[in-house]
Length: 400
Image 1: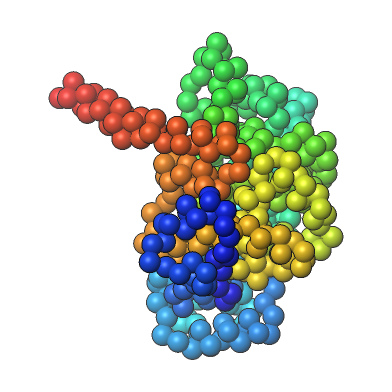
Image 2 (image 1 turned 90 degrees about the vertical axis):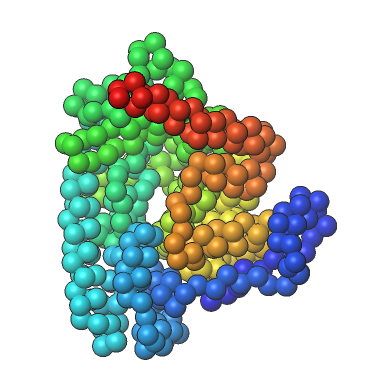
């Protein structure tokens, strides 16, 4: 597996970040080393395995593996379906029968859940469309259909929809009229302000499905780049179980996926797989548009980070000039190493809001984003670590 290379530069911001790696010679490669189980998972987390990758998988299967740990890691990263598909295709006798049976059972369960989610998704899209609201899915079963041509090959637990900010309130009322249960009550008077500053509404459907209606990737006050209007004007169509649904152009989808991954510090490997597979299947991707849009929106480093991870971890081939541009950003390699430290950790904690804000402050290029994230961290700390626990303690004392 390629190493994550730290590149030398005189940029003061780069040196500031390099100081975090005290004692390291930052002009030498830094290679986060995955466990054999994670290396096997990375090799299996793709639609096509070439001869060299198949041989590497075979060698790993011949080793003494922690199979329980492998399944837990695959579940954590949302990669059970791809792991099962690849191993079943190779027909290796080195996979213990009970392990293979567990993977098959999980694959079937996730497949059934995905079918049920598709039904809910199509119902929501139909209701919104009839009300004149353009909404597009960008993850979940639609992304599975786009990347893998099979909705069973991607794990997900909820349904995500994107609408324009100007359509957010109308879309909310449509879903409420359909009987969706909101996760929080918002007064009519506060609705407009909520849409101005926040990023989504969450609903429960039939007591077992969650639908997240979003109009931006993160709250406005995080100051992440907004989804450009050109992305909405360039909407195409995607066939989802035979039903045509709105769908972003590949260049715009790549932008959204990279922003979403950065927002969550690429906490799940399946998000890197999404980027890698998009690059693989879209051989005619307009790279000039991708890079120009990233620069225009102030998200170049975030997009480059997603591409760097896809290339390094999952062998996604980038055009030579694009790869050179990605590697010309020293902080991209540093951020990627930080992401891998978390991805490769055996007992990793999910990235919380404070961690996400700190990461975005380093990944962002716009001063306004950096400043907002630095200001928000102590405010979130006070809210989540002091105010809310204090209020809960008071309520418990009053109840006692």
